[in-house]
Image 1: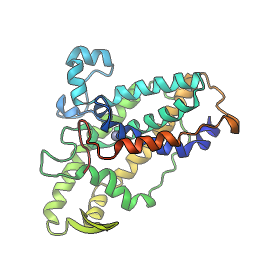
Image 2 (image 1 turned 60 degrees about the horizontal axis):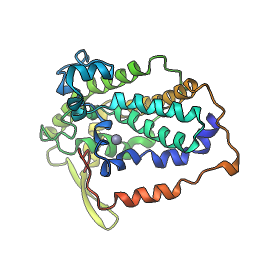
Image 3 (image 1 turned 120 degrees about the vertical axis):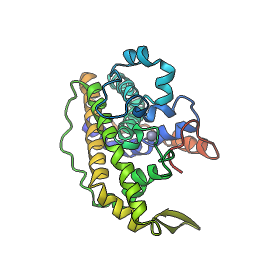
Image 4 (image 1 turned 30 degrees about the vertical axis):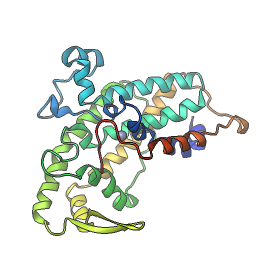
Length: 280
Ligand SMILES: [Zn+2]
């Protein structure tokens, strides 16, 4: 398993953004990336939402669940598909599903993927989504410690992923509150302009980003690190559940997925996103 993943890590990386790209083409894609728990709960812990999909559908209806997001259940679905692909040693599917699974698991670690106020749009904090998940890592991630240790087998992956989502939900109030507080403290230095290629773009200033990063007390690093660990655990669990198949393959079995990546990139150009636009 290790050899296979190491050999194909480049493809897995490239395909990992595919789930976001699909939001431009597939109507059903958007709700797979989040769950607006505050539609059901005002405060952690999450004790109104059943963990099991069928019970949740019975309680709230499928339409409601789809409207407010299904990330924990979709992760379980993709994990099942990955397990099947491993059993069948379908290398192309293993790569794509591993990438997708990684994507959704990472999304579940982002606090703003658990709230209706996902981009601060309800509290005049527009842009906070990109600040937390893009701007801060862009500036600070080189200093993060991503050493997670060995993946472990997950005996109850559904509860594990609900635990992840619960942690994200518990953190989202701080994510919003700290930004609000700092905005009051630094009203004139919140934004600055940086050149990107030939254009100049308005961004959260380095000072503001740095102050926010400190206020969050390693939260972004902790969530990213946990996400990395969890992705490994889910891949490993899928492989164990598949009966630990030998995934080594010889050089001439290698697959060329580049044409697919190219056509996806083309599909994205000039398209508008279906459903929720997370960043801008
Ligand atoms: Zn996503």
